[in-house]
Length: 215
Image: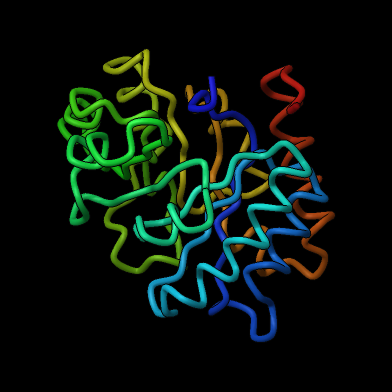
């Protein structure tokens, strides 16, 4: 099932390291073994992101990875992404499901109530966080901690959880142990000197804890 996400989920960000493009990040992350790429940009035009999205679509298809676009439904449709990821202030998953019945829909949640609503709205997965403190999203709110993942995992056992927020190679094993199906990272890859190697190390740490090899 496409929505059964697992492993390392890398979010692109052109603002963190000058000169590193969405495509650069996606290509390196995929070379390192990432299983999901999310194109995320709050500032660029749809036209630019559609051009970028077409390239990332080709890269993810070649590697067998999932391609998700953050928030921009027009971009997701134009470049034939596998799905879309939205936050609590974006279009509700229930409405999106009516518009894109065959696409993956992910929803960011920070509470048990939001997780249960996402399940009722037929989201395919939830992004749970921030798990730890994070510098890439200042408005992310108070960290939920590992107990927060475990609590939501217990409440919605059928819904895949993508943990996000402050995750790195040193704590990713604990994130998997707490019940996450996948771990989403930004700075742990984007800010690394060698993005390919950084992704490989995350994949290795994840597999060491879960015993699952990413396909």
